[in-house]
Length: 132
Ligand SMILES: [Zn+2]
Image 1: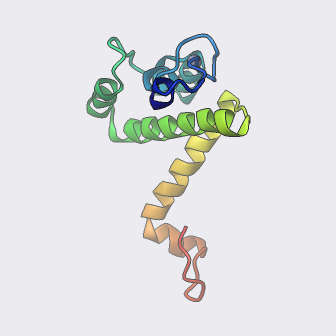
Image 2 (image 1 turned 90 degrees about the horizontal axis):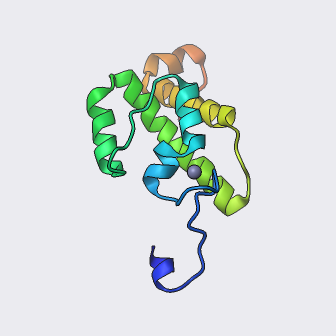
């Protein structure tokens, strides 16, 4: 938006589908690519009737179970990352890659919360001081 106001040429079309105008709501929810990801994840996705992302996110957070909220937030992050990878590194992603990324990072995050997992897996030793 700031670049447009300064008359810097920017592509206003969504880089993922190249058919609709890019907005946060479009990229993360209503884009055909995003819809394919939501469908593949299998938790469903409510529509954005007013196209207001914050209202949509509030609905998701209040309607979904804790587990579905975790998946939803992780998919939003993975979708935004795939959009940025395409825009800034010209590296496109497939639906399956986005899902695998979301699942991998969520599983890593969940296991990082579980201290007993750390001990049982022996991934962290007393000498290296690292966390995962
Ligand atoms: Zn799109």
